[in-house]
Amino acid sequence: MKKQLLDWFEEKPVVAAAKSEGELQRCLESESRVIFLLFGNICTVGSLVEQVKAAHKAAIVHLDLIDGLAPKDVSVDFLAEQTKADGIISTKTSLIRYAHQKGLLTIQRYFLLDSRVLENISKTTSPADFVEVLPGVMPKIIRHLAKTTGKPIIASGMIRDKEDVMAALSAGAVAISSTNSGVWFID
Image (cartoon, rainbow, N blue to C red):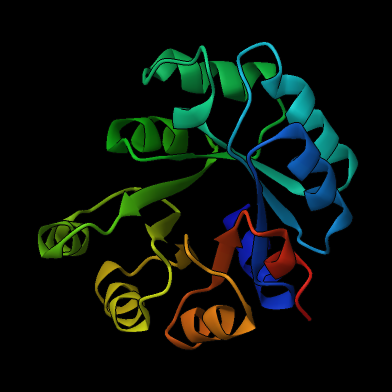
């Protein structure tokens, strides 16, 4: 799945991220091949994933944001066994490690709050397939992380226009993720 995502990112490096049912419908209309689900609950996540899969797109669920799922291995088991999710996003390395073992695509999300976080990301040996960094409008930092982590970088947060997209990609990000629907439809 990682290779397939990398191929899709070469084709269309914009990931549409949905925070609501209405946004999901717009995501499905976009050319994005990968959809990040940033909302839902234990009762709805399966049907949300089904909608994404029906549109022939990859469904990546942000496990930390699904109501009713705890930051425990059993939540990963639930997503792997009860939904057709292709992968997860989480800030929790233990969940990333477990999901990776279960065969799900994994994206470790980091919030770049200060230089200590940056140092920790560079030193961490996360088993994640991808590293997602927020905010994604810091080309110099993206360049540094692309070199030091050895992982494909997804830039997210605060990306508002084509200039932001191009800056992140030029700095070494393989893709950007945005909840801004205007970004989803950039040529």
